[in-house]
Image 1 (cartoon, helix red, strand yellow):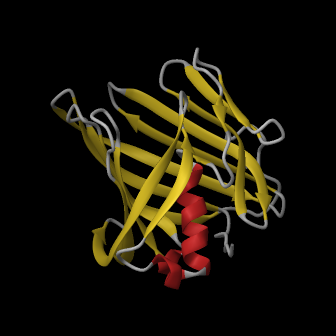
Image 2 (cartoon, helix red, strand yellow):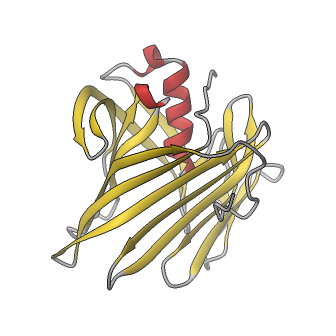
Length: 227
């Protein structure tokens, strides 16, 4: 499987959403760092009065792309998932049973960069109308997610008009998350818009405002995003 990883980058987003019926605006950031063998990802959304949500993913880089080793999700307290490929399992810090780890599994943060690297390497394999299924690990579970590939769109973003291809994960069950994200070929397949919607009406959308290169070098092992 061909992949083409983007260079280390800081992505800044304008964020708008709705929680419990109330609209809000926030700022968002994704920090993507890697060297030849390891990567670190850190995503944060910060809103006045709502606080911050921080996700991180760290792991190895292989010929097939990203191989996560730890994923964390923190609002008030942190929940984490640990990938153990030798034992073919995922362990959770929450009181959740272990899950069987499948090949090419990703977490809820690394998925954007893994699919983006696959798309950047072979865009012909991600034609509109096709689909891709990967096991996606969250802070409490690991499930197969199917991503349907939509048409190219020109997005009106804070960073400017940007052509991008749409990927959608439709809910399979009543309380499943719906996820739409758009990857831009001009930015090495990086996510320029991310939209999440819950069944209760809560939603959040991130639109790219700036993309700044980061210095190359060994990534932080804890996903902190420190240079």
